[in-house]
Length: 271
Image (tube, rainbow, N blue to C red; front, side):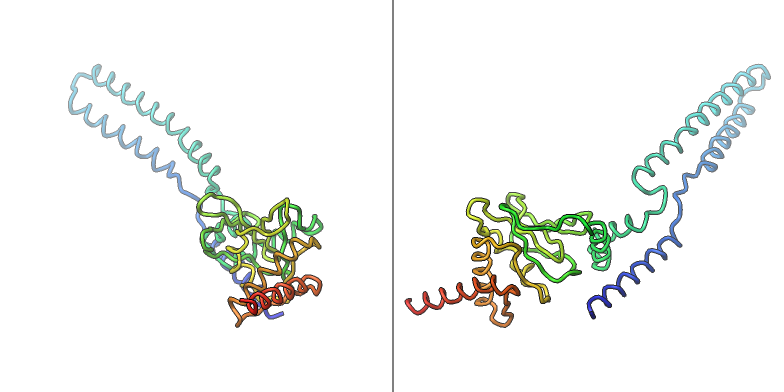
């Protein structure tokens, strides 16, 4: 409950920041009037020089007409420039203030946690009623409490990339292969489609998997190969970090963790 209250407060503050941004946003000034004024000033200076240089009225008139022609050409060229510049600004999204979602997306790229949380909320509402993320032969899903935000962190040998829906995809630095996708309330891991076990790349995601404070902590599905390999990872983590023991919230899945603990104890006794 406290986490929800904190998240609601952060999003309210984020909305206030957006309102402040809108109040101070200014439309790009293309300075069209100033540009036309510069052309007219240049023509006046040119005519002043013509008056000083040529005394014959007929010769002077010829040069005046040439100066007026150049002014006309400059104004015609300038007429299209603001239109082209406005088109470029519009394409870049700078001609009008960004919408709430566009602004939030920009803030997420800066690593703003409140913006990431808000974007996740938008994505969650859009996905409501759609098919739930489930375990498949090539992917396994680890589930956590609803409402948890994805975590952007530097994993060993992998880097996260923020997506527009607020999820974070982690890829290996050496080959660019995806090792997981952090959706907040679930993490999707790669697994061997033949054997069904989690690959070695899953060990890189340990900080993500075990860094969440939540009650729900369980794999999706009933594939024995997945449950066994996940139980092995949890048991391994608990040995490495006995100050932060994790229990799988699904009793049938936690049996595999306990079995992994028993196998390790027997191995230690024989050694």
